[in-house]
Image (cartoon, rainbow, N blue to C red; front, top):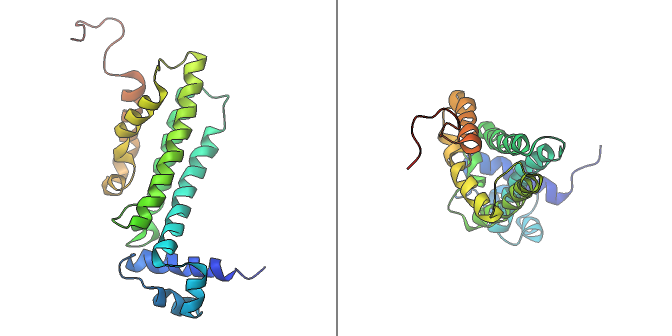
Length: 201
């Protein structure tokens, strides 16, 4: 098996240190020492700690997006089922990071400008993916959506609790039923379609 490149070694070591100590307390010198390379070698690969943190954050967000995209590929499924499965894949991917160390979640949500940059790119791709599913459902007549972009924004607001940082504070035992209830609320609403006693105001 081939040796990992210097860049990959630095990223691997940095990820371990950041998960344990957090971005604030991890220095480039720490990374160099643990990787057994010179500090200058670390700076040759990453011009700043922010660049290193941003790359690690982007990789974590990319893993979440990859899981969402993989789930979305089954276009034979009903658009509602595709949407539900994509949002569940997102939640499961985020939750998988909880056991990665005391500061594993800092690479997804913290005050760091590097993490915010990675997060911004992720949100753009996430909106695009959900927009494609909604557009497919609109074209097929399964979704009553007139403005896809606005609907995606509202949808993500509705599911905000199932994304960082809030998802890390939820009771994992209740998460399945709670996200299922959200799917039901979003897809079916609260109003009884037939036999309701009162009309909505």
